[in-house]
Every structure is written in structure tokens, then in C-alpha cells.
Image (cartoon, rainbow, N blue to C red):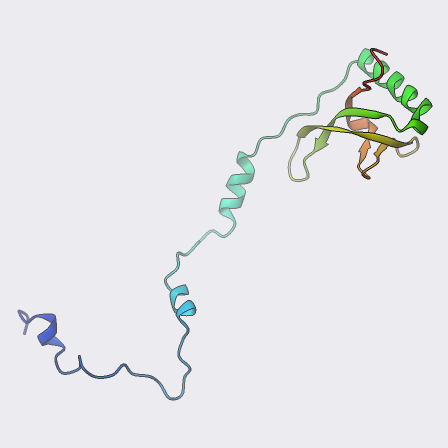
Length: 144
């Protein structure tokens, strides 16, 4: 029977109905398809590779002159805080997963300066640590 076609090989069972167990429930098509899905032997490996490929920037250290300028701008903002000045702050945002971070820019109305916590608070509730600030632009002031 080695040369017989597939039709001849299974001729005795080909027209019988598909067997359905009386004791076990039939598997759903979704579960059945799951048996043939690809297998990831190293679970989480792709996430680790993607994380290692993500770049972060190093925090830049400001020189004494830049720190003095920032301090003067913060003092000026403290004097006019009741007017809720519109400012633009460039600051370092530390990365929660690895060393370094990125630089972000926030523009908005400043509503409060927390001296003890060393934070700036904007009208939308955003708080930025003054230690992370690298530049403050105050549009109404040319240069401090």
C-alpha cells in the first residue's frame, strides 16, 4: 500500500463524522490556536534589549557664574511671584530606570516658590526641583 494515494489510504474512515468526547468539553478555537503560538524561551529579554538601547543624557554641571545668574533670577521671581509671571524653565529630568536622564522645557505661570523644599510650582500643579534647573527665561526681563 506504499504507492496508494491518500484517498485510498484512508478510504475506510474518510466519511465518518469527527469524534466528539462525551466526557470532556471541546476545546475552544482560541485555546486550540494558542497551542501553536510562538514560544518565547527568554521572557522579558526583548524588554531588556530595548531598555539598553534607550539613550540618556548626563547631567551637566553649571559653573559658578551660571549658578549666580540662576540665583538672581530666582530672587527676582520671588519678588514678583504675586503676579504669577509666565516663565520658561529648562531642567534636568532624572531617569527612573538607569543613570542619567533627559532635559525638558516647561513654560507656564509660576504660582509659588517653595524655599525649604527648593521647588518651583506652576499653575497646572507641576513642581520642578530648583537643583534640576539649568536655565530660567523670563520674557519680561531682558537680562539679569
